[in-house]
Image (tube, rainbow, N blue to C red):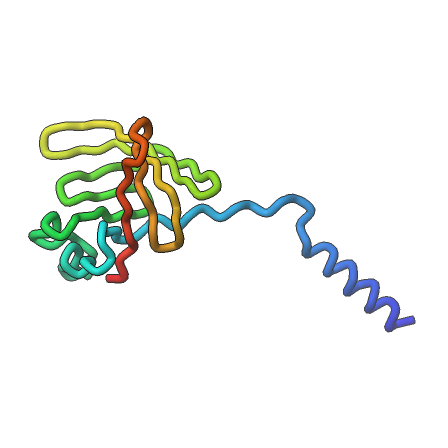
Length: 139
């Protein structure tokens, strides 16, 4: 009888550990340094300062440029953008950011298509065939 009780208990625990609702889809991990050319990463980004923070090199634009995505902001060489909203659906990330450059504030919408974990493309709505690919840099 003891063995039967243990079997019933194990079955109940196993059944309780399987959720009855659909599992939440994990959002794409967007944080990191992204360059337009994977082989130019070391010429676009470098770790600097005491905190060893990833930053742009002096002539990063010559090598295609890129951006740095953090938890709540996106940084370019001359822009600093706060992420206002983010919506993930299938293989697309829709971002609305508030950007500040040296002279202007603006809201910008980004449509990013996830190609794989380390490659995305920025799409420009209304401009068929216009896209820019970015590759995650391992700095």
